Image (cartoon, rainbow, N blue to C red; front, side, top):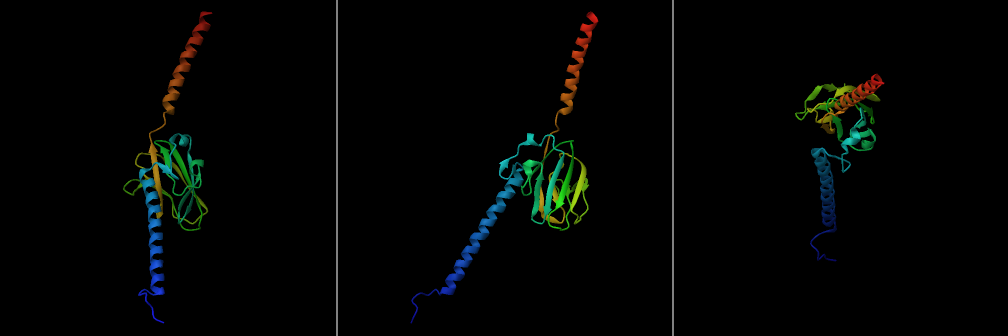
Length: 190
């Protein structure tokens, strides 16, 4: 029995396997690109725009740490998100707590754009159950939170202008003071 087809079954299988592998790699590359673009834009968590107002009043960030990346635990808007963007308000104080999800050795550091630690905001590398970086005062220098030994455990920090609570408080006091003066004046007139 002679073959009329110059391509053997073995060669056809190799070509099919190579094509499938190429398609798989191309699909993985597209996913990575989408995640990187979201991170570069600093405005997406899970493909949705960040609601900055939802972050008002937040002072504790909780994350699971594992070799695959950070996973948001709290506040609710980052729960379950991989390497979520964290929104901080300048001059506000925060605590970052991370839970060890894989028993590996990790830490958390706050970096600037030059990949330098900001204000010594970093913890020791440990394989403990949890660790907290306390008293982090948000500043415009902050760009990322990261586990130093694991570059896949890095995500953006979006720093917003300070909240105007103090200005509103002063205005309220002035308004209350005027009411008190008017109230006292009325009492004196009686």
